Image (cartoon, rainbow, N blue to C red; front, side, top):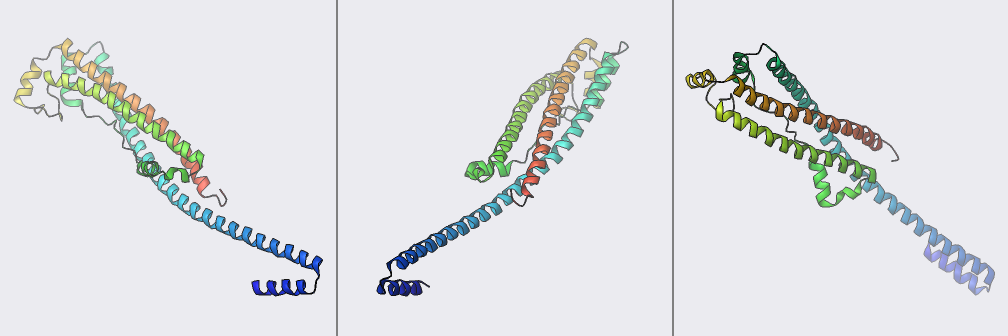
Length: 251
């Protein structure tokens, strides 16, 4: 092709047809420019296609992580709500005017479970990997912003949970110094020694200890429930939007 154009150029020049030669030269330049532009466009399209494939793979990984989070959060919410109902039941019985020392001992010794269920483990491996490698910029700006907001909510939940759990453990520790709790590294609640300890329990003192323990347990549960609901709503909204984006033929 190039050889053909060269022959044409020499032929026109030899025949001294300047005007035709000039038009031909301009046409040849235009063809070269158009060819370059087409090549650049094809290269850009290929690069965009590769980036889109990489982006889709990352998005699928993010979606998988967030879906796992929604399952975990829903399970935690069910456990926390059931535990909160139980704690409120204890508080209601203790608030009754007919409450006795036997009621308090029954709750503290046999019914109350000191273990908590507020710790949530979020699946943020993909996000952390993108952040550490700088690959987060591959994603659209709105996706980056949404992921950062959700991660901030995760961090806030973990930080607050640690604070509340620390306060709760302090109350449990104080209680356990005086009265044996089941499943908390203490003696069996049905042992001879436990019988002797509980036989000496005083109404007001046990009430104060038990009330403080249930109060912080209740606050810890309610805060965790509210936070997890907010995270769940935000995550579900983002999943709807990112799924729509990822399934779009021309995002």
